[in-house]
Length: 72
Image (cartoon, rainbow, N blue to C red; front, side, top):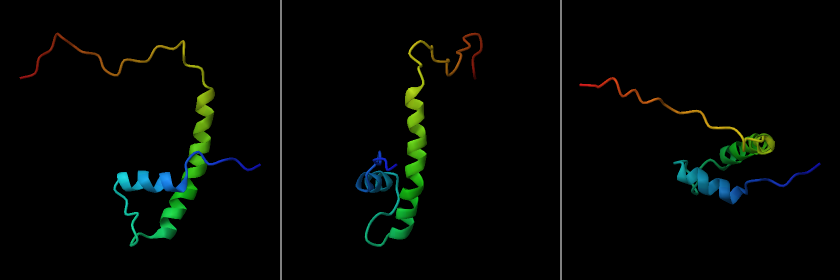
């Protein structure tokens, strides 16, 4: 069963470049291809998160502001 990749190689290269990886002519193309191949099943496994219903869940507070304490 072949599935369509959620991320094209060209998009991967653009994101990798934005993240600071060398994607130019001097880059190790075999390593970039290996990284892209590794990323494909990771992205596919994240697709299952789309089925989780969270519309009725309230998000946890990321922090609690303690107004009773002050820092000096």
